[in-house]
Figure 1 (cartoon, helix red, strand yellow):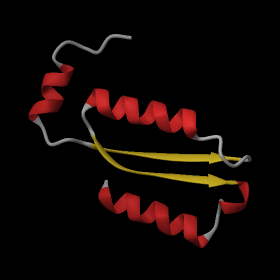
Figure 2 (tube, one colour; figure 1 turned 90 degrees about the vertical axis):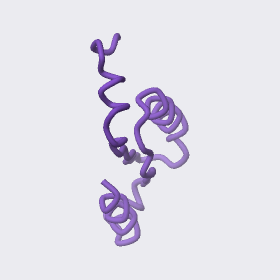
Figure 3 (cartoon, helix red, strand yellow; figure 1 turned 30 degrees about the vertical axis):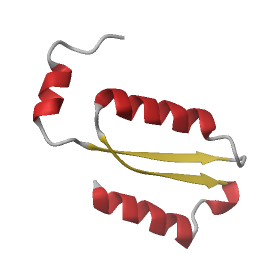
Length: 76
């Protein structure tokens, strides 16, 4: 997939937009592929990495996970 002409130049002229990855699964330890893709994409796009939050089934809907997400949202 090709990027539109001038897209990277227009991004470079602006402040780097933020990016965040939120990943959820029923299984622990399955996020390596998604995290690798995320890091590759943000590097290619040249955007700011504000962080990653992962949550397996028993971590979803907990106060700790919610707090992590809210911290990332403050950076966006």
